[in-house]
Length: 370
Image 1 (cartoon, rainbow, N blue to C red):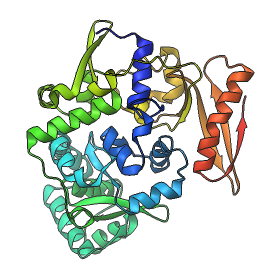
Image 2 (image 1 turned 135 degrees about the vertical axis):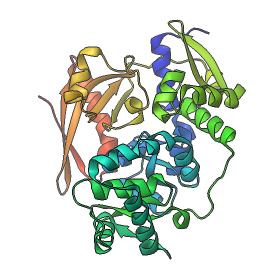
Image 3 (image 1 turned 90 degrees about the horizontal axis):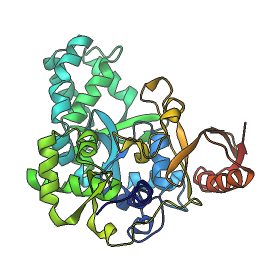
Image 4 (image 1 turned 30 degrees about the vertical axis):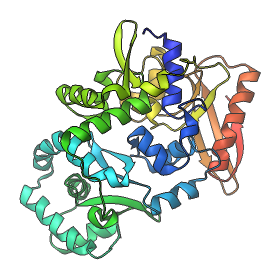
């Protein structure tokens, strides 16, 4: 079956839970369902990660999402690519073990750059494990103070690396913030009943979830998202089997949830507007973003090409503007920067889309245009 680019965009909006349609946003009823459906969600920036949930859960506030995280419906850790993601709590351990191996294997070079030995990293794990045992929960600065108290140098980027290393090894995970700081807990205590699939089952699960939550897209995108080898990516797709459907786009092989393909492949309608955080899976979930972002707009979305993404306005599946917000006591000021010509009717539709975000942060919206 051959799909047009517009059909791909429509299906991706459904896969990513950004439109209400058969197989789409109506399948997500809470934080656990959203993160399980998508497999994992970028969460390097916490505020961005929280709104990624809010954009898919109408009526939720940031406080609602945070409360769900306290209930352990999802947690933050470094499951792949050395980057923080939200993952289903009971899947955190096997995801770290499956996809973190290649990043962990490259950690020795980073330790050498930082002047850290492997012995020091292991010692830091022992210190943190003892400090957090029995249900402990410490902020990032408290963790660093504990390490420093045992004579471990945490200056510069050393402290961050040691916390990352302990999490990548499956000792720690990130719990909801204490104030404005990350907090850390022992993964085995935070999630005492983890799933423990065999390797093939784990590969099949992550393949199904990725393509179900991002498809139609390619095996190359899947390997890039997970950090798996192409051989493992191919194996995961094979294990997922008939749950995935294979379609072509401009002659390129792509995969998606077979159940979604059973519905009429919808185009991304011109009236569909979504306001998304900079680090949303809508862009971060793919190596090839050419369908969603025009080449001439990439510099505006990723200024300096430094990996820092601007928040976006998406219409008909394409990025048409970027936006920034400033929180005041009772208002949220939103500055929109169009990337294409937007008429008054377009602006009015975008302003209506920002009402959901304003409800999420529990403030009155004030949208500004250039």
